[in-house]
Length: 202
Image 1 (spheres, rainbow, N blue to C red):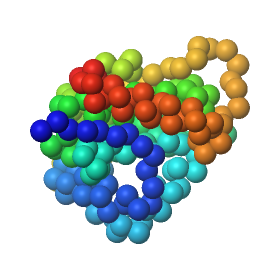
Image 2 (cartoon, helix red, strand yellow):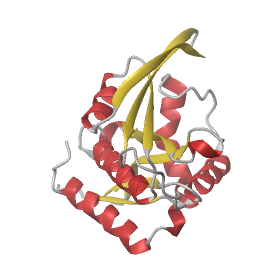
Image 3 (cartoon, rainbow, N blue to C red):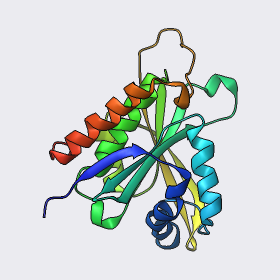
Image 4 (cartoon, rainbow, N blue to C red):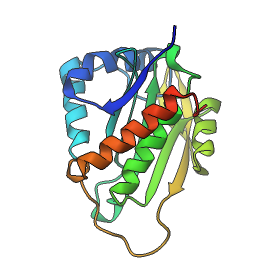
């Protein structure tokens, strides 16, 4: 049976479904350094907090969330306002179908619309799939934090990758995500939804 994907903006009401995707990463992997699965209410608050400034996207397949991606400030100081860290999580059944690529590419385009200039991926090593995704989308490795996180009884290295947008000219004011033109946001979501449904993003 043909599958139908939709990429859309996340809402607080997605929290439980997105936690179903995220929880196994917490319990079973060091991909996230979080130890405890948060309550749905806390996760809903995280979605709301991020969406006030940055995109938070959901990928649905046949009406059910199978992945999500978001960006957030990498540091608090004002000079870092043009930088963001990106994250993407997929349900196992959605992997290898282009959903991660579609979410990340859509996220990058929306961040460019906000006038962001440098994007970072943070990857617990080794993670060949994540490293390959970042490099395919133009991220370059820039360093490793050795033994940066303790989980499951051992230390884990963290690799950092970066992607620069817009050249080296003067920074333009960052536009908070909700202040972007809603039609342009939807056009971006629709464009990557169509690409994903047409199988052009693997």
